[in-house]
Amino acid sequence: MSQSFGNQSSVKVLQLLTQYKKLSARPPKELDEFEAKLLQELETKLAVILETKKSSGPPDLSKRQKLRVDANYQVRMESVGEFKKAYIKNISGGGFFIETDNLSAMGTQITLELFLPEEKESLKIKGEVAWTNPKKGTATPQGIGIKFLSLSEPQRLKIQKLVNMSLENELKTLSKEKKK
Image 1 (spheres, rainbow, N blue to C red):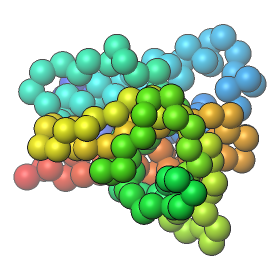
Image 2 (spheres, rainbow, N blue to C red):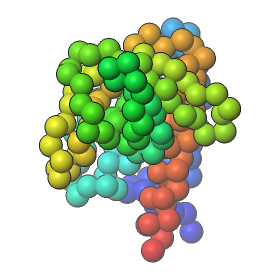
Image 3 (tube, rainbow, N blue to C red):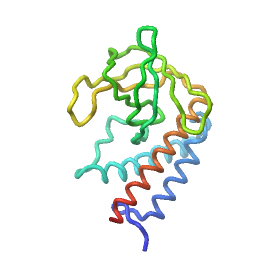
């Protein structure tokens, strides 16, 4: 019997994931208009599947331009000339959310060192604080939302690999929870 994700079978979700990974691996500038639109539709469908499983109501995707998935990767942030360790809680091709009590003002540009699974060297990237959550004890943990600034193509591919790994893990977890 096929596993179900809302009104999507696991086979259909696997097809969506395969298409998404194939298109997202290509540089955005190389996608034609149809492929760019298809990638956006795939991201939306996958986001709906993920968010519908997490919450009781329909997801609000109005703020997102990229598929965002849960993650748990170590990152070091440059703060006043020194690096502080923190953890990424979710990631997309456009940025990530870092749970931290070291809040920087919106618009602040920071250097980040991301530790990648299965990689010997960390990934150093530049980002900008897009938003902050100063309050502990809310649905969203205290921390900062980072928007990537001028990723090189090799950096973009490494970030996309993390998104894909996190997406696969999240879909596997949802599938296991559904079987219970």
